[in-house]
Image 1 (tube, rainbow, N blue to C red):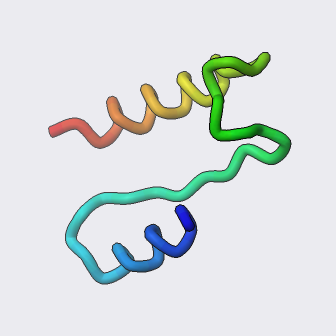
Image 2 (image 1 turned 90 degrees about the vertical axis):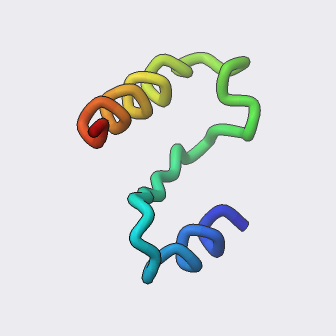
Length: 50
């Protein structure tokens, strides 16, 4: 579903990115290694902040 949503934004001016984390469920904060996901999200947001 998320991949399909990302494809819908392909022609939108909105800035989007799709990234998978294999072996993880949707409950990211409850799993070991959640910091990797949080670090990526923070770096992405900082790099694209206006």
